[in-house]
Amino acid sequence: MIRVIITGAKGRMGQALVACAKNFRDLEVVAQVDKGDDLPVAIGGADVVIDFSDHAVTAGITGLCARHKKAIVIGTTGHSKEEQAEIIALKTKVPMVWASNFSTGVNTLFWLTRKTAEILGPDFDLEVVEMHHRMKKDAPSGTAKTLAEILAAARKQSLDQVARHGREGIVGARTSTEIGVHSIRGGDVVGDHTVIFANNGERLELTHKASSRDTFANGALRAALWVVGQKPGLYDMQDVLGLK
Ligand code: NAD
Image (cartoon, rainbow, N blue to C red; front, side):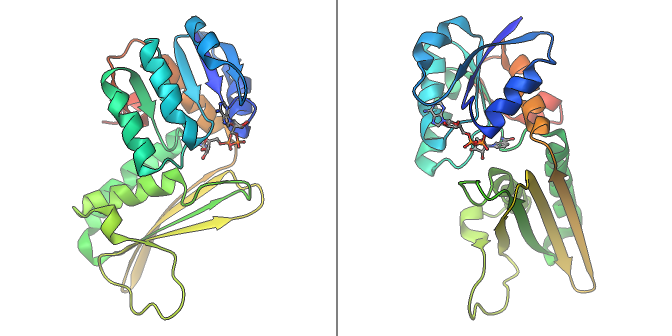
């Protein structure tokens, strides 16, 4: 039996994780931790922490896992560059699965996006559009960032140099190198992502729409079962699904 702690347990994803975990025979949720609860006390009784809380606390939670030799699954998004570096520095000490999106469909979209960019080549204009519920705090979504990173990597570009976040005013003609990234917020949308490949005379769009948080929760729980017993290192959902 794999013993799991969920951090961010009272949140939308935390609640989905607690509910979905009941369907996993080999996994037991031993503690539900939210703001104000004592993770350092609870961690001794667990094999793995699943974190869907807040970007500011992920590095501290990962450090605690490293000190206690526990694995971690990170679903939280919105980390700054400094926070990301702090987490990545711990990869030699703790096995961690870190994914901006745990759904099988989105991980297939990642694969398709890479393949499509390679096939269509540099003549197509690339844009990523995402929509999420009105309560989402970070923008663009972690998944949209991953999609844009995949597109930039396929063109051997640095995303920092080519990302174009929204447009307003007299922005002039689109350059051939930029990768547009656009965030829409509203209602209770769980998560929609579209990658647009546009050329003269034709346009290809790849779209994924999540209608239930259970898809992310089930993926994260699957990752938790997988990561326990792995060597310290930074893994993603493509590793868990064997897509690499
Ligand atoms: P939410 O706001 O509903 O829940 C976050 C929870 O974390 C809250 O209950 C909050 O009290 C708690 N929290 C804050 N600080 C904490 C701390 N120090 N210790 C423990 N708990 C703490 O948000 P949500 O919609 O559940 O999303 C949570 C995160 O997961 C976000 O970053 C979101 O973008 C991300 N997310 C990732 C995926 C994925 O597949 N990777 C999918 C959906 C959401």
